[in-house]
Image (tube, rainbow, N blue to C red; front, side, top):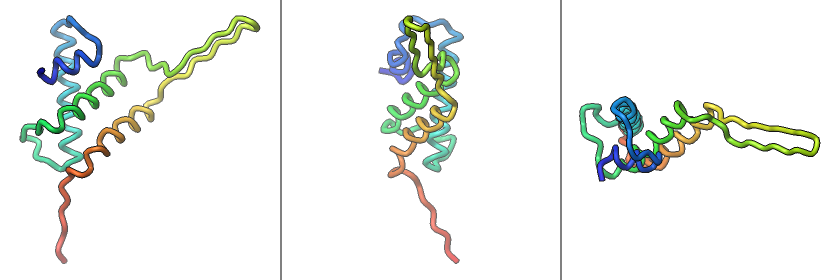
Length: 115
């Protein structure tokens, strides 16, 4: 299954228009760049297949960050009429991105400087 198709399946999108497809490809590119940055890889290189799941998870997170309603929880009670809505903050998305990238830490390239 192609990366774009896997992202569409994870998002629950069956049929999408060209605008949405372009947007999803941009999220996949953004995720690929974030992974390459984190791992200190060459930008021109193709992302290794072992990082595709992380790429899809990051793209999913970016899509939700920009497109979702950002509601974390809602509650409503009728007795004395009470309503509560908790929203997802941008920090929550940053933490999620960090968690995904931290799983790739063992693949990071590390450079040592000589004195």
